[in-house]
Length: 121
Image (cartoon, rainbow, N blue to C red; front, side, top):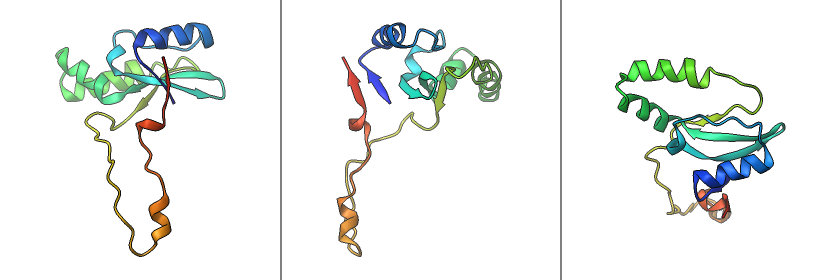
């Protein structure tokens, strides 16, 4: 996944690299970045942030879920439609490693973290 310093940088990148990629108007705060698939670049959104925004607009939990399922995720626009990550909100990075006493070689496996994401400035 490619991450950017701001939504404006994402828009600039997509205008240059993939002008057919779809973005969701009004949910810029939920935009996490861009991934590349076989067809081009796709925007990645935090589903929980979108749901929270819908609830802040006055929808109940169930109404927000239904609206998201039907009007946002359900609005399939082709291979370059946005994709949604579940469970990112409130997630803390685990930087501590537990030592594996039974198999010391397993201690050599690197943690996957946001530090591995490519940053475009």
